[in-house]
Image (cartoon, rainbow, N blue to C red; front, side):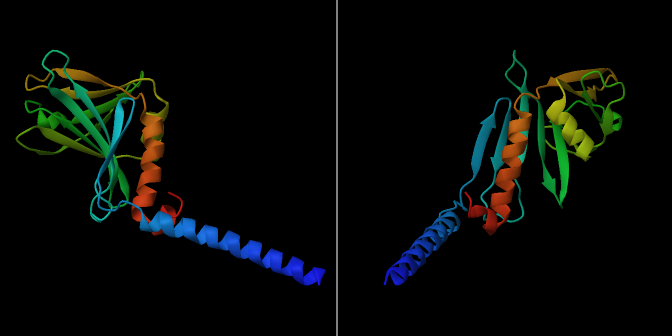
Length: 189
């Protein structure tokens, strides 16, 4: 008699644990806000995500550099994923020397990484770089960064960019993209 009581208690406890686990998992998938865009700030960086229901767009880590005097945007960096590769898009106002491209430099790096402009719009020109693991790691460990662009007169201008908050933004970006693109990871949200 005692043996049956113990068996029923163990069976009931196991069923309770499985039920709670399944309920928690269903709650994660069922309540995930797939039609809401989100923005989160990490010091000088922010993560902007379109709704998860939008399959052809991904989140972006963004830093905006503003001119203190005019309160105008001088530069915007947006890092994200395109076709399975990490990319960095740098937007600068019109009036840059397109053939010179864009330079990216960290700390006391002697030779910047140079990449070309992809396009220009009414609001500015956009440089595009496929980011390798080394550059991604440098974003997380460097003390300071600079974007280099040449004006129409050929003079190079170094625009300082803040790396404050990048490591936290990168971790949150990775976690958010996993949840947006996989029902499995939504179980744990």
